[in-house]
Every structure is written in structure tokens, then in C-alpha cells.
Image (cartoon, rainbow, N blue to C red; front, top):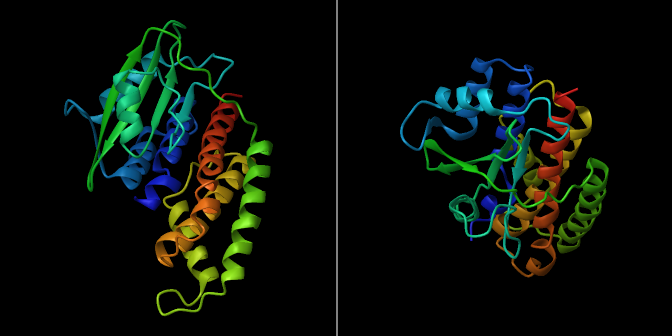
Length: 251
């Protein structure tokens, strides 16, 4: 199992950048640069340039909606993705290791699902349009998500400290966690991201780094029952942070 794929989400930052761009907080050039940093070369699944997708999003996105126009959906072991069951979008988003981005249409009978197909150098976007309601989002406030992650961070940190690892493979757990936290934060977020969301994303990155440190870097799976339970809190924080960002961009 790829531990990093379960705890890191480049699509989180992609969704935030799309929201900031749609509401005019970021330029198209800056958006394209950020997406290249996040996922390499970008194109549609039919090989059209990404600018065609952006033009399409600009045409359909409901920027007057009271609900966030962009939403991130993630899934993991034991947790189905919040897309129509049996749909091609749900099948692809459940197996691509990345999730999907939902964009609200001004026509309430339509919703657009962007699913990335990612390889070592290229991200290819599949665009699905649904004409029936999508599953309701599990709305969690940034405060609630942050509280869950705070508790998870404290619990995971105590586990690492209690182990007292001093091995050739990993001499300094705290240093490794810090370095991985920096990795998860790269290449960053738009400048318009509210501080509350930035704090939540940083917390998610920190917990993700702790999980990866213990399971992947230390190679210790004795704590899997406790650590794997943190994945859901990480995903929830990332989705809640995106929702909050986009809501603030619209103000």
C-alpha cells in the first residue's frame, strides 16, 4: 500500500487554486504554473490543452451560489467517495489515488466532476457532467476538523515519543516529521487563502508526516490500528479546508 497516496492530496491545493482563480484572486498564468508544480504537464483526457477545461469551467461555474462552487471529494479504505454510486466518475475517483473536484453549475440540475489521471509527468483530466443530484457533502466546519486533527496529532506524537526510536534508518523522528511536513506543504497555496484554512492544512500535513514517519520511514506497522484511523481525519480536514477557502473567496 502506498502510504503517501493515502495521506497526501495534491488535489487539495489544486481545488483551492481553482477556486481562487474562478473568483479572480489569482491570474490564469499563476494558476497554470501552480498546477504544473502540483501535477506536471496538464491536459484533458482527449489531449486538448488545459486552457480548454478552464474556459469550460469559467462558462458553467455558478459564482453566485450560496454554496461553495468548488468542492474536494476524497475517499479511502472503508470510506466510499461522495459521487453517484456506479458512475464512471465514482469508479475512477475511487481508484486514482487522488479523488475528484466537484464544480457547481449555474443550472442546478447539472454538476461537473473533474477526475485527474496522474502519472509520473502528466495529469490528464476527465470531465464528467451529472444531471442528477450528487450525494450530499458531509459538512464539517474548520473548527471541528481542526479539533479532530489536534487530538490526532497529540495522540500520534505521543506514540512516536513512546517508541524512542534511535535506529540507523531513522535517528531523529522529530526531524523527519518536520522535513516531511515541509514536503507536504510544497508548492504552497494562493496568497488569498484565509489564515484559518492555512492552519488547518498545515495540521493535516503535520499528521500526514507523522503517519508516514512511523509506517514508511521506520517500517513499523505495530501501530497500524491506531495510525490508520487518522487517515479519515486527514481527509476530512483537507475537504473542510477547501470548502472554507472557496466560501471565503466568494465574499
